[in-house]
Image 1 (cartoon, rainbow, N blue to C red):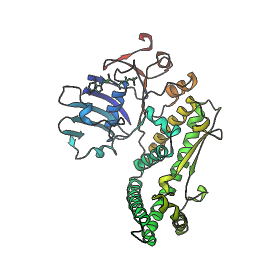
Image 2 (tube, protein in one colour; image 1 turned 90 degrees about the horizontal axis):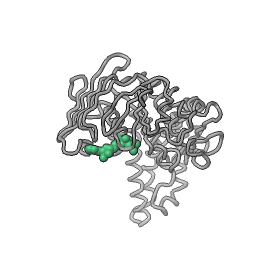
Image 3 (cartoon, rainbow, N blue to C red; image 1 turned 135 degrees about the vertical axis):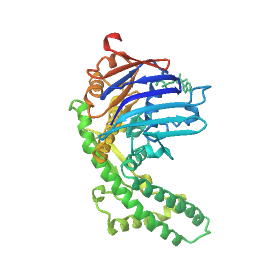
Image 4 (spheres, rainbow, N blue to C red; image 1 turned 30 degrees about the horizontal axis):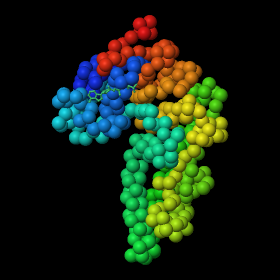
Amino acid sequence: MRIDRMELSNYRNIETALMYPHPNVNVIYGKNAQGKTNLLESIWLCSGNKSFRGAKESQIIQFDKPVFQIQLDFSDRERLQHISYIAGEKRKVLLNGVPLKTLSELSGEFYCVVFNPDDLDIVKDGPSCRRLFLDTAISQIKPIYGKYLSQYESILEQRNVLLKEIRKQSYPEDMLEIWDVQLSKLGTILSILRKDYLEKIKAVGRKIYSGFSSGNEQIGMEYRSTIFPESTELKIYSDELIEKYRRMLEETREDDIRLRSTTKGIHRDDFEIEIDGMSAKQFGSQGQQRSCAITLKLSEAALLKNITGEDPVVLLDDVMSELDQQRQHYILNKVKEFQVFITCCDLLSTLQLEEGKIFYVEDGKFIEKSKDEL
Ligand SMILES: Nc1ncnc2c1ncn2[C@@H]1O[C@H](COP(=O)(O)OP(=O)(O)OP(=O)(O)O)[C@@H](O)[C@H]1O
């Protein structure tokens, strides 16, 4: 999937912009607060997702203007397509001239993967960030996963309400059983799907991370289930596994009532990211942690390509800081199977680009530059 042409108007600080990106690497270079992230955000919106900065459309419209517009020509394996995204008081999104009812209709048409600095939390922060990474990535390729997950979350909520009531002695303990059975079924299938996805990410990620570190370091990933200590058994959905899940809920019931919360289950699971067998969170350097997070995102893109047959556009916001020259060189020159947009403030990093386009941005204006002009 490649963006061939894009045009923006009144998009945050970008009054107008017209770009013909390179099919592989595009470096968006400029000082702070000039519009680099704004450009990536506009591309991301065309994938049917909400802003990765959590902004509403009304905050994206340039101050004092009525609407913003994004016009995107892109080609997938089969054809050229066009997205027209206009948002003001009302939103109007057209795909190849046909109006769409919901934004999510774009998600199966234009694929994107984004890395933004907050994604470092996947490596550095608590388990919820890693679970969110897995849940979002799997839902994108397997929509049924998202459905199971929301069912799980709603049952979990009801179980937790009941735990509080039982603690107040308003209800008998055995009322938990119906929730436990349902949680066990859904929790088991979700555990298996997560484990399977992580194994795939691990296989792809090893090659990417090895490229990052010039073969000097190895990345590892391991799913940590609160229910199944031996995650290797998470292969086939079976009555035996469901029963094991249910028994675990039964065993922790007393604790759960005391704490008024379900203490075990997929909502407490995690995965470990290791470099050469050591926890990346505990022992990794800034550069190693950043390399791990970027590796996860590039692996997500590679899996999306394996499954959908389409290579997503990859958006890398501010990835260069904390990376040494060799790692920067890898990102700029070795990630060739995707169209990539990389933002960057550092001229020296930009100059390492061997093949691709450089767009210099100042005050929301994008100018294509050759290396000699920088
Ligand atoms: N709705 C809006 N209308 C006009 N300008 C806006 C709007 N929203 C944000 N901006 C401006 O956009 C600029 C920020 O752009 P952006 O986040 O793309 O910066 P950046 O080039 O990525 O910078 P950095 O390198 O610091 O991340 C700020 O100057 C901000 O005031």
